[in-house]
Amino acid sequence: MKPVTTILNKVLVREFYLANATFFLVVVGLAGGFMRSIDHIILAELLVSSPILLLIPIGVWAAYSFKVTRFNRALLKRGENEFLYYVSTLPIKFQVTALTKALLLQLLPIFLYASFLIATAAKHRLYVTLLLIPLACIILLGLTVADIFRALLKGHREQKLSALARWIHERFTKPYPLFFPEWIVRRSPWMAIGTKLAAGLLLFAVAQVYKTDTYDARLLGMGVIFAFAANVNMIWEMHRFDNHHFDINRNLPIPFARRFLYFIITLAILTLPEAGLLISHFATAVSSIDLLGALLFGWSITLFLYGWLFKHPYGPDQLHSIVFFTCILLVVLILFKIPFLILASINTAGGLYFWRKHFYTFEIPINEEKA
Image (cartoon, rainbow, N blue to C red):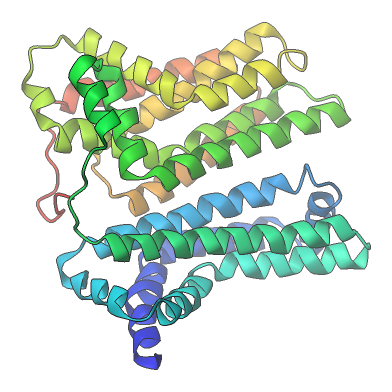
């Protein structure tokens, strides 16, 4: 049992923190450089004061846990790590114990901050919060352990379509904008669900804040930035699908305007939960112009990231750092009251420029395996 735990710690835990060292340094630097200890305490007291506001850290934790899940799945696909699939031959009890210990270390930042929030809630005798925080942590840990357990068990088995799926495929022609949504749901269902939950919880929490006081549209803008930027993993997968897994697409005689139209339709399908929350929860909080501008602004963020990947084909972990700094820049611009439509126009122009200029010259880096 101990050798298995040691191997998992070296392959999963150590490699995770080495790959994301820059990310953690930036977060620690921002948290320690821009916020005093009293600011952290005030923020914690605000977050634990209401179950609704508690959705904000839970949403961030969910995004972090899916970052861990994605990293682990990518690590398992490397040729030098195929020996990890032999873990599935051990008794289930040993597998779950060893994986739980490794995932506990990977999710350590969540549990450290959760402990801080629990101590704050206990100080103010907020018993509902004291129940919700450990429950959220246990659920996230259970989901991440279940995901890697399933990945190890499944290995490289052939995936067979059900009779119902075969019947549907034989009788109905699937339009191109549905190719990727259907593919990502089959390939990474937990990542897709987690992304939508994290973005949805964030927007829902922002909507509840509007009910407690009067705010202008800048608060909505900041929520839109982080909610739509949370789709970074799906945008990366969409870019990889269009230009790697389905690379024949680039050789088809499709005009660029039609490609862009297909992208917008696919993007609208992928962001239906976010768009629905914006329309249903913010219609009375902000003006119709600001609401429409916020939606276009959110879509433009994803379009910019998609176009950026043609010029800079980063891996998902590298892209997260770029997205983080981009979000900070956009938040600053929002605070300076730059209109949503202007920011959306800039993002759209930048994304289309990178996309159109580098579309036919783009190549996947040779050191990346076809997964």
